[in-house]
Length: 207
Image (cartoon, rainbow, N blue to C red):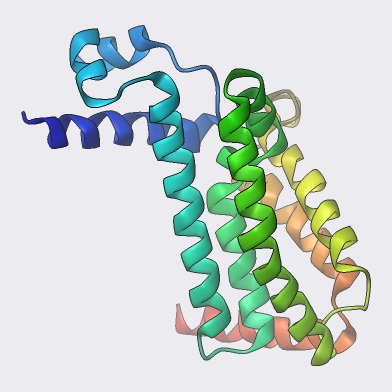
């Protein structure tokens, strides 16, 4: 295998693991034993463990940002966009929840700052745009955007807490959907709930 192929192999392994479990300290032993490669090969491809973490976090954050742009630009109802936003959040919740970012902050504070800045300057403005547009169309209640975003971020972290999942014999996806539905029920207007119900019914019929 050449350097590029090894890089893809290592990134895919770590990325899949973090998407399933959230971010935890990366050990070279785990990488080398699972992929049957040497430490020398790992450092030939990546100069440090922080570079591995950066390539994954920034790569996935960039993908999320691009998906968010596509979501805003697509020709669909605002109710459908809100539902699609939930699906997008679900796909990234394990990697970017508070617990994962807390672990990252302890190990790589500069990378953590880079992610926080990226979210603040690029991701949050797009979410604000979506929320403001939803308010304009009377789909969600006029609560402060910052409060809505903070509430969603904090509450959805529960869906990745291992102790909660084990105690309640549930899985991340089921808990996430329940929490998301509860939060949506609190911010959607009657009009928003009606349109969302229509969209869900149409999706069920099409599937």
